[in-house]
Image (cartoon, rainbow, N blue to C red; front, top):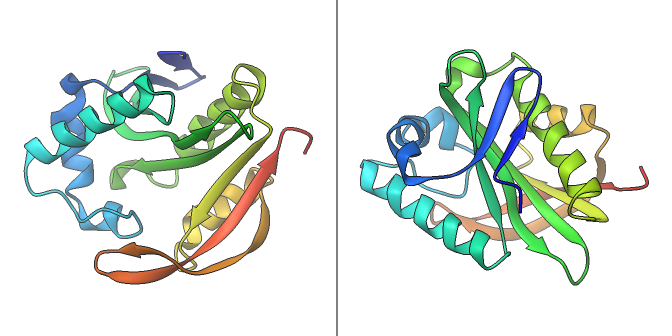
Length: 176
């Protein structure tokens, strides 16, 4: 699988332990983790463990996660990737997060557009899914701008932070 993706303003590099300090700063922010299915991190060791888990899933071709770098400064501003890869059914679930200082600047859309292109044209994926909590309006607006279709609400689909939550299911097909 591709270890890096270049866009106009961003560089997506497959996650590495050297990214743990920057990713810890992002994943320890309660505003960032509010709609993620993780508790906010309280130690950098948690970030290292998460990166190790994601690297193992990547080796098994079950998931792949990238750190998002600003090209100009080489600063890590978030992460994105495929939370799950299903090559039997040619589908993947997309996920993403950005540090609060980088919200509203089009970085998430730019990163996701590059991931969609990679999935559809390099991995030959047919369907990309995004599962989003109904209250996460910015994320919903983002996938709608990228022409994802709302398919419905998965009731109490996941346990997050000790409680069952609904998830809105959005998808985009290679043919869309």
